[in-house]
Amino acid sequence: MAGSGSGGTEGVAGGKSRFDDIYDRPDPRMYFGRLAPLEYEIPHHAQPVFRQASAERAAFDDGCPGQPAVLDVCCSYGINAALLNHDVTLAEMYERYTSPALQAMPTTELAAQDKEFYAERRRPDAVPVFGLDVAAPAVRYALEVGLLDAAFTDDLEQGPPGPALSRALAEVGLITLTGGGSYITARTFTALLDGARRPVWISAFVLRTVSYQPIVRALDGYGLRTTLDVSRTYPQRRFTDEREQRYAITAVRALGHDPAGREESGRFHSLHYESRPGAR
Image (tube, rainbow, N blue to C red):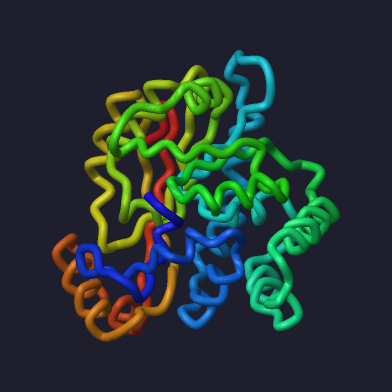
């Protein structure tokens, strides 16, 4: 479950490249530096979608006290939290973390600057955001600079939530996901929903190379009805090489999708799913 499902060049899982080392760094500079040439962009597309879903969930009266929190699954360095709660764009984040002026800076100094940077850009409609990712250095940094209100490293593919995450789940009203569908299964979602104490909505961007239907069926068992945005697909990133592109084209065709103009043009594409109680 490490990272945001962004992929990379070291190691191969199911034909999709990945480089787990960018999630084990003490700050996000390598993450952005490695993903910049691949034009990893799905958080940019998710930004307005998650803001709308968060606002609608906050306005929904579920009879529970307090503002519902957002849980970003496979959150890495808190990219989605930064884009949700701050007046900043993904392009600005790339520019910041790949800037030559920041490359020699110690992590402690970068973290201090980042804390101030995001505090100055905090939106008045900011909501509590929790992060879940097995990459401990990444979530630790996001928590330190104020992007996350709480962070957890529980691997829900392997076992149930620990005590801290179990307590936090009582506050969660929206779960978000960008790309992590390549690495997690229905086990993670059922573990989260088993611990929920208020109605939970889910907004997920999932690569077209992956079937989301097992998760949809699991969510249906919790009374969540899933709708698919059929109006468009969302480009995620460029392929690392021809081998990865061949894998993606084969995978999307096997799932009944047409790769023309999308994967055949050199990029992974995602679909957007929304799951809400009783929605059809």
